[in-house]
Image (cartoon, rainbow, N blue to C red; front, side, top):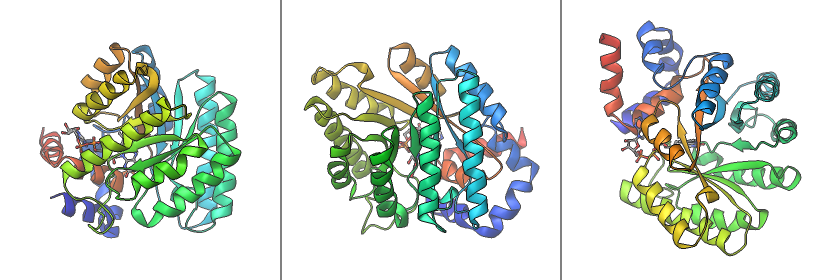
Length: 306
Ligand code: FDA
């Protein structure tokens, strides 16, 4: 089921046709408050009242012209201004291929630098998502260059990739900001762990390595981008055993998923950030959410029928 859904996520015909169907639009509402940025900002204002911070991403990837990438960068500059104007505790997370990485890496770097500078004006971080494994090395090398000029930038690393432990050691000297996730794409066994147990074990050891580095005096910001509360608790126990405060890491979860846990963790004094997606290009992203938990397919069907 996971592989079928991930194949559907990549299928061009489905991507062009399925989102036009009313029932698909209705089902996606569970994972995003709306297609326009205003709905995302309104949702973030509500989260702020509950002590939950936000992170925004405009859906879309692999643009095919540099002009599209330029327009995405302009869009995010406007969003950063709106975040500031509305005094929202919100950060922005971008996909490099949405800024034109496939077409012109230097232009993409210039976009990322402008966005990071705008984010720095209000003390915020610009996050870089991690896409499929074909982009892993390029994205890390890109982040090394970006971090050198713009310290307020963070990178997503995926625990299903076998290389992640080494990537952490490579990035530690840069005082990195890392969002650790399990990984959302279909990757081959040669480069990625396939079973949940291995992915989870690698997740915990990556988080432990980052906490140990913090304990040893490295400057690191750690975001746990997972809904796996069992793993979060294990990692929190390790942080406490090292004598690190609750604020030594941040829990980052997606809008609409485990909201009860997001509220509980925030009320217990953990830093919690909700990633709010918006935009029209939601199809591949939505299919990856269904693939993460095939029970969501039943949920979607019930919403369509009900
Ligand atoms: P796992 O899938 O094991 O789920 C643990 C539990 O959480 C499940 O048992 C279920 O209860 C709940 N759950 C998880 N997913 C759910 C869903 N879709 N619907 C309902 N319940 C669900 N990936 C990537 O490759 N690159 C990236 O840049 C990012 N960025 C990112 C940012 C943030 C803030 C988050 C939270 C996630 C990402 N991801 C990502 C996605 C990530 O790789 C992963 O696919 C999902 O987080 C699902 O995995 P979990 O860690 O939640 O664990």
